[in-house]
Image 1 (cartoon, one colour):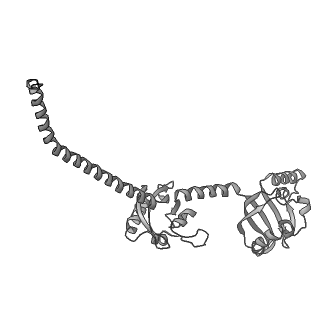
Image 2 (image 1 turned 45 degrees about the horizontal axis):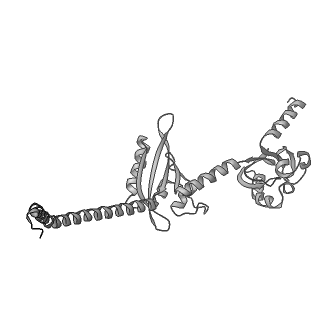
Length: 301
């Protein structure tokens, strides 16, 4: 094997230092062998300072305690992938996704590679979307038509009355359909089936029964997505809780109906009064005309 040229090492080091991620290698004793320059910004350590340090000395006791199960897992030969919130040297809160990959030689773990990526923009965008969905009482969902697996947004869990952080998993269409009101369930599933077979989008109003047993009114739409062969491989859609909006619309319709009835009654009363008054007024007018015609014949004395 040809030796690695000095320029190649320099270019590799430059590449690692320019990447917007934490990159390092730790041996089987969790001591650092090599790291890139990103550790300066995040933890205040120059790569040269880190060599030989135990990972706990770099991460600090709190983060190390949280990461210890993943460190033990990777040293046992199992790849680890997890999320972690960190505070860098400037005090900035960063959301990260960490990947620990074991370095296995002849069946023995020699150490592990670390890649920590800053996913703060993605997390903040997700939180903004969650806030917007909560304001609109609008959840989003996606159905994999091949596996029947379903993915829900956090707001959709809230709409059906489940804490999105509770760890409850509702992975299939069959298990989720229990939240649809029994009288509407067949109609809803028929729409999903038709969209899967024909690729036709749909919008449907129906009722759900929440985990607490409350009946809510919703409107949902589904938009099929086809693969290169034209087969529907997934359906994406939204579901909005319109219970209060529908109740307000019904109340407004009822008030408008009452106003129309009141207006009709007023018109009837006015018509009746006009008929009752019209006859005596007509007679009075006739007498006044006669009086006017005969007025000059009256003796002023």
